[in-house]
Image (cartoon, rainbow, N blue to C red):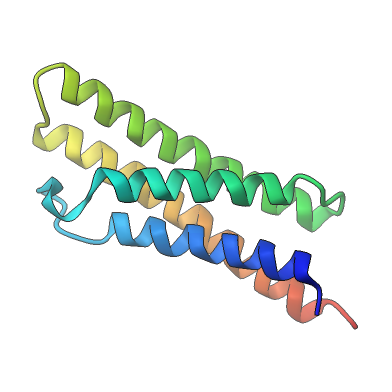
Length: 125
């Protein structure tokens, strides 16, 4: 068993599930979307991104690109949330933007997991 692959797979899948946990819920209310869950998704996505930095293969490049997309979208969601909170609070438009950015990051994470599984199935012992 390759512990490096186990660690990378763990963080890739954890990033996706945390992102899904934040994304899932009513689109009109922030009651179902907690700021600490978004923060955890950002931290785990950044960890997954750093674990992908050492891979010099073509698949590694694509996996890194999907992680960077997810990082940027989640950080943008947190930035917009912070700006909205300090400029008078949330409205439906801001909530929609935050959840939409999280959904884009979720799609990038799902792509990353599918590619990771495909690469794992394709690899030979």
